[in-house]
Length: 134
Image (cartoon, rainbow, N blue to C red):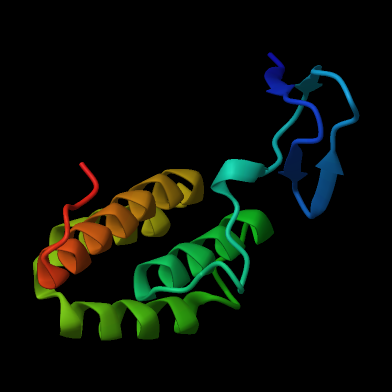
């Protein structure tokens, strides 16, 4: 069964190692086979990974897109180690991410990492006294 992906005009999507940009109108793609897919709204770049949790997200994203944890493994665990040193209360979320990575479910690990990014935003909002993201 093919995965149906609908793209907005000019929206980008990553299919494996390739960036695909849509034209001027909405489009439907039917992806047959197994390939990592990320929509533009879910993609982080080195420039936009501007917080510790977002850098962790970027490391997991790179693992997912490469379908291999090899190169990012050390980077990921150093980032997680540093993050937990500053925010040990994030351990349950990090455990969930690690479990998904260890079971080879890298897309699910990426979804869990979004929770870590949201949690970090709440912590920062609380520390600065501004309203958090809820």
